[in-house]
Image 1 (spheres, rainbow, N blue to C red):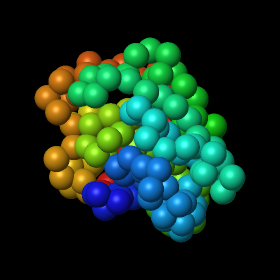
Image 2: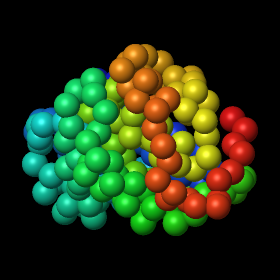
Image 3: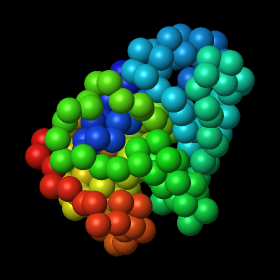
Image 4: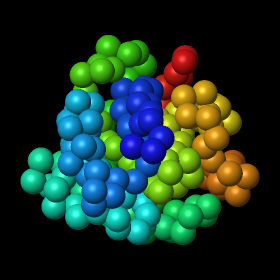
Length: 171
């Protein structure tokens, strides 16, 4: 892995942000993902590896490609939020399940733009304000989210994934 992976645990949601595997190191990633309890792997960039390597290990792969440095199109956003809701049916006000629950791994090329953007969107859906989500991710993974992506997060309107279940999260 070029950049060390970053585990994001907040409100009962668990994400692993990472850089993109390649054909030559994909099997190393399988072991790392298993150690975090990853059930799903989301690829937001062009394919650089055979996803069958992960599928054979019991990790479901999802291709949610969108342009680097930009915001996800509506269809990609809907697929992402459906996956988040399916994996994490509710948000929690405490940290009792952290470290033991399911985890979604998400990557772009370097794990600094598209992947953290999707995670920030999930955190906003769980009840964080956009600046809190961005700041939380930046404390865990410095350098994430460009100015255009922050502008998108500022204007993002929750889709009601956790309707009536928002939580106040203390980091």
